[in-house]
Image (cartoon, rainbow, N blue to C red; front, side, top):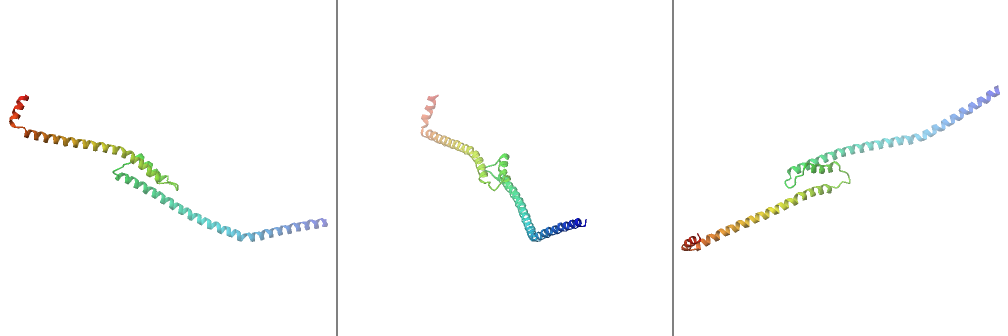
Length: 175
């Protein structure tokens, strides 16, 4: 039994020795990886700080965008109130203000310009036609008045040139 015991003791000793050796190797690898892990942690912290700064910057820019959108909308409504040539109705104003709300990097202000220009032309053409008609009517009335005034002068001139005796005979003869 002492021989068996010796074998078991040697085997246990060998197992413990191997385990200590593996533990020592793991400890050496850990010691080698510690600086890398520390560097990676520092890098992670640096990236996290950069990300936080970027998020704060994005939040500030988002807030600025919202402020600018609101300012643009207010300016649009103020412009519409003070505009005498073209007044947009509420639906048209909403369409234009949606441009500010839906603004993206790919957005083009030409869209709003086109919308307003289309609306302006839709108002302008009938107004121009109405103005032309009114100008023609005015010109026609002016010409009629001018002709009437010319006719009145002609009648006065004719009545001055007709001798009184012809006037009497003419009036008797005509009646």
